[in-house]
Length: 73
Image 1 (tube, helix red, strand yellow):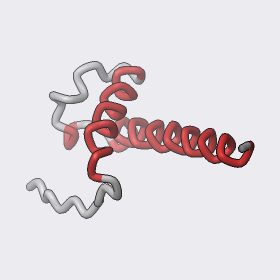
Image 2 (tube, helix red, strand yellow):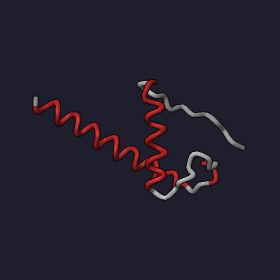
Image 3 (cartoon, helix red, strand yellow):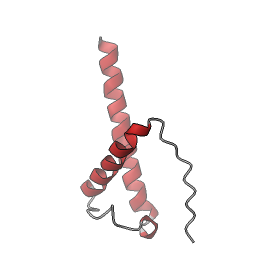
């Protein structure tokens, strides 16, 4: 029984498409080329966690780069 209670709210609504694209690119890098069509409920927690973890890692790296660039000005 799938419970579709997703309480995650996108702070910048225009970023949703970019985040979805990033998710697909990262899944592809991790060898999950058909990630968009896969039922995520059939994936292991580890597989789903890899995608979310790498997304978080890359987003933190981007934020650090932006913050460092702003501090240099």
